[in-house]
Length: 89
Image 1 (cartoon, rainbow, N blue to C red):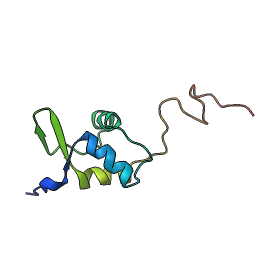
Image 2 (cartoon, rainbow, N blue to C red; image 1 turned 90 degrees about the vertical axis):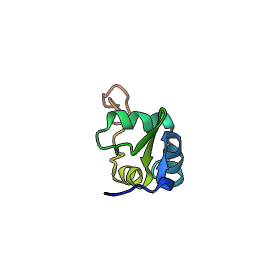
Image 3 (spheres, one colour; image 1 turned 90 degrees about the horizontal axis):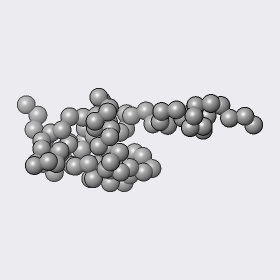
Image 4 (cartoon, rainbow, N blue to C red; image 1 turned 180 degrees about the vertical axis):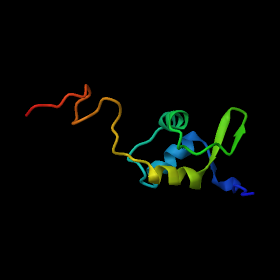
């Protein structure tokens, strides 16, 4: 069985810091990481939980962010318009 190195265990706040430090995204917040954890089935499973804090294996989380398609800009965003309609020039 694969043991996770305790030095690689990170929480939501540390994930956000490392994602930006490693240039995997220009910005990241712990709230965004939490949202991804709850809504993206590809987000890695937690390794352990200490009280209410979930801890994740950083190499697995880093791979998730490396492989993630960042071209999606959010629901309704197409051609720079929030309502989904094309903008005329």
